[in-house]
Amino acid sequence: MPEQPAENPRLLDQLRDRIRVMHYSLRTEQAYLQWVKRYILFHGKRHPVEMGKEEVEAFLTSLAVERHVSASTQGQALAAILFLYKEVLGQELPWLTDVTRAKKPVRLPVVLSRGELQDLLQCIDDPLMDLIIRLLYGSGMRLLEALRLRVKDVEFFRNEIVVREGKGNKDRVTMLPASLNERLRLHLRGVKAQHEADLAAGQGEVWLPDALAVKYPNAGKSWGWQYVFPASGFSVDPRSGAIRRHHVDDKRVQRAVRKAAVKAGIAKPVTPHTLRHSFATHLLESGYDIRTVQELLGHADVSTTMIYTHVLNRGGRGVRSPLDQ
Image (cartoon, rainbow, N blue to C red):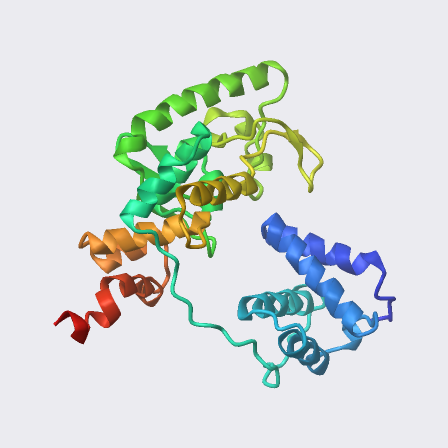
C-alpha cells in the first residue's frame, strides 16, 4: 500500500464509512474516530499501515501507565484500533500479549433503598422527567433504551416493553409497570397530536435504524416508529443532515436525577443507571428468581446479575455482629 500522510482525511473517511456500513451507533463512531486520531498523534502522525503490534501495545500501555485510564476506557481504545486494522486496513494483529492492562476495580453498584427511591421520586418537579425516571426504575431499562423506545414496542395490554437493539445489539422483553400504563397512554395522546401537527407542517419523519428507510420509505412518518419521548424541538441529524425531531436528550434526564437526589438529601452518588441497579436489587429482595431478573435486565451471563445479591447479605454476609448478640 502506498505511503500516505497521517493527516490525510481519506483514512478517517474510510473508517467512518466502514463503521456506518456495519451499523454502529453514532457514539461509537465518534469514540472510534477520536481513538484512532490519538493513536496516530501518539506515534508522531505515522500512518497506521506503517505500524503494528508493537506500536499498538505502546499506545495502550501508555494509557494505563501514564494516563491512568480505566479498564473500560483502555478496552474501548483497543476495540477502535483493532477495528481500524481489521475492517479498514485488512490486517489481523497478533494477540497483544505485552500490553500493561488497566486494573479493573471491583465495584458494587450504588443501590437506593425503597425509602430513598420514594424520596427521590417525590422531588422531581418536571412531569415528563418524572414519567421517564419512574419508567427507568419500574422497567430496569438503561437510559438510552428508554429514550430510544418506539411507540410500536409498547404493549399496553400485556404490560410489556420490547427493548430493541439493547446492549450487545440484543432485543429483550421487560415489564411496563401497571401503575404507569394509563399515564403513558395519556402521554402518547399528546405525542400523537404533536406528530400529526408535524406531518401537517411537512415534517414528522423520524430516524430509522439500519437500511429500513430505504426498504420502507414511508415508515419514518408512521405513528408506530415515532419515539415515545420525542424532543421538544427539531435538530439536524449529524450523519445525513436531515432536520428531524429526535428523542429527549439524555443529559436532561441525568440533570433531573441529580437535582432530585440533592433535593431529597441523598448522600449517595445517584445517576439514571442507579435506578436500574435498584430495580434489580428490589426484585431480588422480593424473592424473584435471579434467572428472571437476568432476562429482564438483558444480561448475557447470570454472573453479571449475581452482583446484586450483595444487598441480600445483610450486615456483612449475613453474620450478626457480636455487639448485637
